[in-house]
Length: 211
Ligand code: SF4
Image (cartoon, rainbow, N blue to C red; front, side):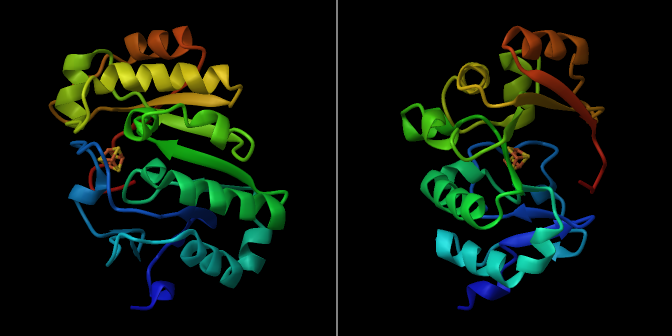
């Protein structure tokens, strides 16, 4: 199969995103993966899930000129990027060496330290410029309803991960999706929690069948 045909790199409003896996340790009720196969026309379901760093780097090279006009690149896509920790590190190193002006952000569910059973942040901190972590809820009960996590104590893990990012001095934002039908999230309580962990807070309104 030809990895160049997979959308490992896609652009939304000219902003580049890296889509490295379809695997995730959550199954969020608002996940765009449940609703459609593409984001603004870019099909993000990967035909295979053993994408390598080199597969992504090839697509970065093909899009070199476009990337030179971008300020930031985001690991995001149709899955949890930090499941592929080693690949994210390798790709980030390549980006820093080849596109020194391109800032790197990771959008993550915050489960990485639980998945890899170690503190992953000292490995990531030298390469990434910011991290955005899905806090999603004001307590464990709501988190479990919204995110359907496949790991134990997921909500506590997410909060620990947020704090660990802050301690590693990575600019950190905790996020929620508001106005999801039937899942009333207490936005102000979430903001208090995010700030108590030392992170910034961002609430994004749910867009049905959108991003
Ligand atoms: S964490 Fe992200 S990719 Fe995973 S299910 Fe939730 S919204 Fe989807």
